[in-house]
Image (tube, rainbow, N blue to C red; front, top):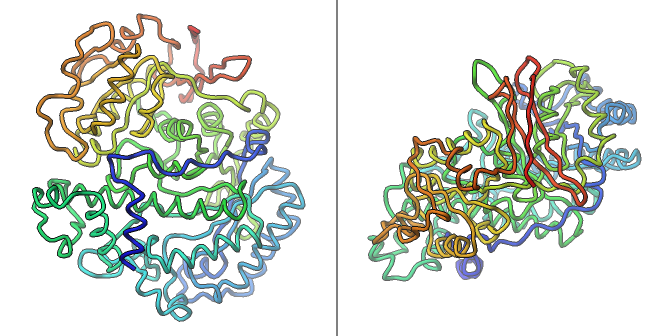
Length: 579
């Protein structure tokens, strides 16, 4: 088994080779043509019973009757009348093939019903956690697949003690879930595979420990390991908690993020080997104001076509903006759709302005009752109907559009993961400043430094830890005429947060190409200076901040999308676009 693990890891490098994961397949033509307007109900019946407080998996007669209505032609007609063209439904939750046999058969029938009415379907292919009470009866060997915490206890799904997280890199578990992918693609004929909870990676279980040791051997020379205090790799114990204060701590965080990306890439590749046009999507959580050091969106999302952001509602209150703009920007930069709950006109407007070909999940239809979202009883807001209609009627405004930007802001994974929240906070503050005073900018990750020439400027804020390769890519960009705005320190350390003899860009002194400012300085003004006082986009009005913008380009035109997050109308909006 160890030889098998080593073979896998030798072809997947650590931080120094970010960006070499398989490239996601191109989305099929229908996605850009029609866009995605989603309705969701993806929990199988037996899970709902257990979830709702009964220590059983057996539904009563009323639940069965409501479940039948949910899977009826009348339900499909009702969803279609709302403008839904994509249904996210159940396939497998984690109770075992025998326990979920009927539910999976129901999924086949419901998919056929949806397809017959012209609706696309996606399926919930796994949750990342077992319903261990029934599953262990079917697969006793699956006890070896469970993730263990530092104290050796089985890792539960929060307070849901009947759910254990499993090691998605365990070879036997991987083979089992390949079978589920095959069922979803071939029997359900799904258009999309959904994989949930993509933030739980390796643990203290035997397989994770051996894989971590194999990663260390494959990634570092014995001399490098010895200099870091690792004399015998076979004795290494994963440092499961605490700050990234040592080389081993940082290696563990990188291994965790790499393991998630490896797993997702493997499932995506297997699904596409069965049918090349199947879409692949996961739920790692959205892109927010803080980075989870055990998760690297930049590596993970390269294998897929979409990902979920189930974050807070969108709005502007008491001078504070709640938005998913960061998620949408990262999704667009990675050629991914973002799946979000869009239950208000504002959330739909934001999705149309910033998202790629997806309006979001506009309703939930569990037990045949159409409501706004999971866990609520509120009906749909009637005002959203006009936005759904607009999304369908004016596909010409969105089809084939790409985001164009003056500047790219780098989210450096090693800097954020190893440098701590203060380092990441510098990046977030710059992003927020560019959002608040609408600027044509994009958020990029480490592997996208290979494609900088599309931007007039690169902003490094909160980027102390950069590999030699990334330093050379940035220097090459500057030598070709690119502009570099450094906010605070940049390139002072290598990708393992080890100090460099001298900061990587200290010798770049051309003021026309490189500008250095302090974190407390006006970064927007500094960027405008870097752009010779002619930024692509300038927006001003009496309601700012509160009005936000995105610029997209199609083959024959440019578009400026404006979204007013304030409850009152925006007045005297002035827009200047320099092409």
